[in-house]
Image (cartoon, one colour):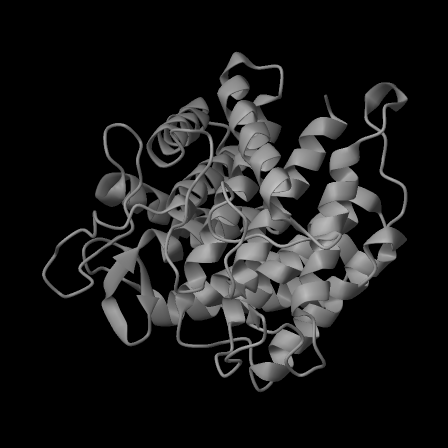
Length: 362
């Protein structure tokens, strides 16, 4: 998958119009392999140029699975499904054959990707694994500190945040769709309501977490896109089960506020240089996509969201092309500054997959 010119012709938009954004999404996907791909067991170098590969980024690989499934959904090309399966096997092998680690949010990201993989392949094993992760999170991470909800990690059961409870609510709604067991919906709605009551402001902006240092303080200094995306995604996923219009209203309020607060010029800037932060934008784009699916592109409420996606991906495309490929940094208003983490490339992939989807339906 290293040759950007080997992509299949782009799926046409309605009316037979070519969709160049499908080709651009393909290029971003193939650029991930071009700049970061390496031999297993590493699979993807953490940075380009190659630097320190000592950190095993479990949750980044979970998002690689999701990204490859985006390409498969868009094109129907089996190679992307094969790539998703290979990434799943790589993650498991590097985690010593286990589904689990110490971070509840990491495991939940993986479970979300596994649930999608089950739908894409029709295999039951990935769905069974997603259920096993859900059960593990409830057994080891669910507690009543600062309200019934999921902790961030096993070593800090007193610390609660959106990055753990958001994907838990989404996964709970999805698993309920496969098997309407009350435990999924009961826990998922409690987790969502906990975020709403504890971390969502009157304008819909979603804070990161509470009690990180055991002092009951909310970390208002961390204004991250992925918290907004997770709340949007959780509201939409639960609405798919509960059919409560208020949930879509909450998602729209958060989406509108997030764009106004975090992308006043239409593009989200860098959210930090630690590597994990590079993936945050991608989470926002993924779940904006689910909201747009829910309300429809012709809805007046959709217009500012679509404008944001188009403005930001236009800028990404303008600034990130490099030697026939695409390399995205943390701030799409300027060319990437080396070294680049592959987490940042993943956000670009997810954004361009959303843009390709929007243009296909235009």
